[in-house]
Every structure is written in C-alpha cells, then in structure tokens.
Length: 465
Ligand code: NAD
Image (tube, rainbow, N blue to C red; front, side, top):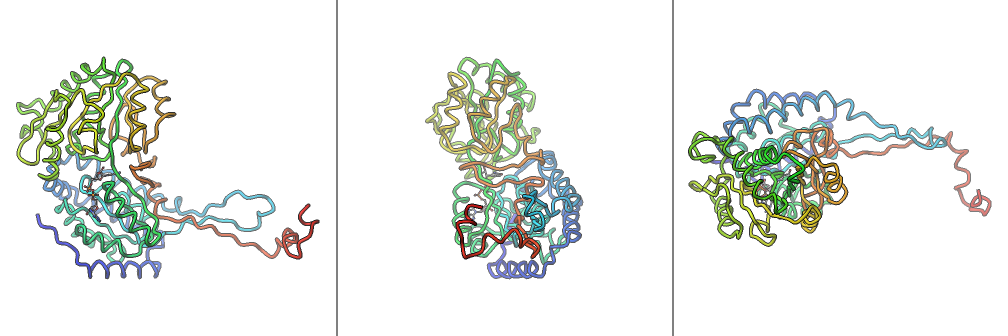
C-alpha cells in the first residue's frame, strides 16, 4: 500500500499552526483536553475493525494481537486520563518551613509546548497514541510521525485524526528519514522518540541543538534467566514462547536470550517443544496457514534473521523453518556461546538463543557486562534469586515469572535505563512527561521582619545570628 508523505512545506505550516494554537492557549482548558481525549477513545472504538485490518495488511498480525495490546489499552488509557485531568493538574502545595508559610509556595503543572512523537513500526498504535494521551492531558498540541514501514496504519491515522480531533492542535505527519529530519529541525516543547538505538542518537543530537527535553524509548537485548529447579519449567516455557511469538517477536520487550544452568538446558528445550505443540498443533506448526502466526516486517529483516541462523555456532533444536521472504517459525537455538552471532545485537525476531551458565552469579555477570537492558526477566519461585536480581542488576523493568505483561500495568512507569533509553510513560507517567513543574512563590511585604539580616551593610552580628 502506498503511503502519502507529507510535504516539507506542509510540515512547516502544520508546526506554525500548532505553535499559534498553543500561544492562543486553546489547549489549556481542562474541558477542551477532556473532549479531545474522549474523541481519541471514540476514534479507536468506532474504527476498531478497520485499525485491526490495517495492521493485518502491514504485519499479518491476528486481530487478537492488535486488540489486546494496542486498541483496548488505548481506549482505556484515554478514558482514564480524561477522568484524571483535575487530579493530575491540581497545583501542589509543598510543605515548607514555618517562617516561609506565608509565601504561597505552589507547584503548577504547565504544558511544555508543542510536542513531537516519532514512533516505530512494530506496535504502531500503542507507541504513538499512548504517549499522545499524555500530551493531550498535559495541554500540549502535538504532531505524531508514525513509521513509514506500516503504511496502512499510518495512512489510517492520517485519515481519522481530522475526523475526530481538533486539527489545529493534533496532526499526523507521514514520511521517512527526510520528513523526520525536517521535523527535527523545528523547535519543540518535548520530543518523544520510540525506536532503535542508532536513530535515537540522531534524535538526541537534534534535540540537543535546541535544548529540547527528550524521551528515548529504545530497544536492546533483554535477557531472561530460568531458575530451573526453582520454577515450573513447563509453565515458564509456555509463557516465554507466548511473549516471543507475539508479532513475530518484533517487540522491544521480547526476551532476547535465555540463560539457564547447563544441567537444565535439555529440560528447557523439551518444555519449549511441548509448548510449541500446544500453540500450533497444525501439520506445518507455526507456519501452517491455520496458525495465524505473524509475519516479519520486510524481506530485508527476514534475510537478517536467516543470516543469524546461518552464522550461529549453536544447535537449532526447535523450528528453524522459513517460508517466502516474510515468515520464520519460532526457533530455539541451544548451546549458544557469548561471542555467537546471536549475541551481538538485538534479534528482534522469533529466535530464542539458550546460553548455558554454571550458576546464578555467572548469569548476573553476563547481564551486567552488557548494556543496560529495557527488561530483565526471571522465572523463579525463590526469594533469594528475586532479591539477588533486585540488588545486583539494573534495567528499565524487572519482570518475574511472565513476559510482556508489564506493558499492561499503567500504574507503573515504562522506560529504559542506560542504552535502552531514558524517560518513561504509561498512565500518569505519560502526563508527567509532557508537563513542566513550574515553581511559584509570592513573598509578601509582611515577611519583611524575617529579611532584615540579609541586607547590606553586612555585619559580624548578622553572620553570627
Ligand atoms: P527506527 O529507529 O528505525 O525508526 C523509528 C522512527 O524513526 C520511524 O518513525 C522512522 O521513520 C524514523 N527514522 C528512521 N531513520 C531515521 C533517521 N535516520 N533520521 C530520523 N528519523 C529516522 O526503529 P524501528 O525499526 O521502526 O523499530 C524497531 C526498534 O524500536 C527496535 O530497536 C525496538 O527495540 C525499538 N522499540 C522500542 C520500544 C520501547 O518502548 N522502548 C518500543 C517499540 C520498539
């Protein structure tokens, strides 16, 4: 499907119009924000089927995998934000020392200004709209720039936005590198970027030129430790395989590689085989036409994954079959060494390397020697193991005994650490991202009796006091 790119002239005029809207304070009244949030919820409710179809066209993703992680959470988050506007925007009165109590010290939440959201192709609705909900709730006009690799989704958003939202405040810009570069030359109140590390660095350099606040939601290799012997290994394999087949494992929080003790590797592989059979009992497994298993985004990315399988020195013990230029079945590779091709960069596809380790300490050491991951997953029933990971590792999230589900808990911030990014969002944390906490004080003339000592001429007596 062909995507209509926004012209550079239109990008500049849209930005100017949104700046004007912000200067005129149109997006400030809470009633306005509430209406836009409810309209956004309505957009996703009314067009649920159409949006699922767009993602099916772009990624071959089953509608359950669109509805559950993207459309329903968006509707819920927009409605919750609309209901929370008063609470989130209430000025705070910090507790101050008694002698400053008459100063009317207040912290106001104010919108940072016109915002820019740049998103990836893998979860095109969630990664664009969940931050947008924060921007609307904060009172920021906003331009969203979806990925050009999901043309049906990007086109659909461009069509629907003006039908539901105030076009003087919320716009879709479509395009690729040139269009994003043009956006990045402009002045923004906040930039929210989700995508790869290399592009994140380009965005950060552009933001630095204008001293623009930035959120970077990046990816990387998220490790998973199976504390076999201290966990139900069959349940673990089922939950891991589920997380690692969603959207063909093209998921920023997909477990990237698995660490397990040498003596438990065979049992882990058997558990994966069993889980695989229950998920795809059809003759051709996950690649069977009946399986509804998702596609790989592009022939280029597909070729990259096959190259990993060609280069690995590990043993393919499950899967390994590819079909055409867009399908690859979930594939488990055992006995993967730390310098293997599969351990060099984020896999972003349905390959599960198993790296056998001697003990828990070695697993933690391997994790800590690499860049800080978005998520660390641990499957264990042991309090000691849990505490060891809490104490000795760093990551955006530490998830125990399941995969992927942390993204559904909007009461907690979601974001990275180190090379997996900075800043966070979801629920109120999305709102926090797009507001400045502005301090306000008013020192009344009546406070003058407390000020006498500060004025020159300075004296030893004042210093001693
Ligand atoms: P990407 O970085 O290639 O593209 C992201 C966005 O940047 C797209 O809108 C694209 O048009 C734009 N872009 C690409 N090249 C650019 C350039 N040179 N200059 C300016 N803009 C440019 O990422 P992707 O391939 O779409 O997504 C996959 C990556 O995103 C993975 O690394 C994944 O882990 C990460 N991701 C992270 C999260 C998270 O929440 N942390 C969520 C989803 C995906």
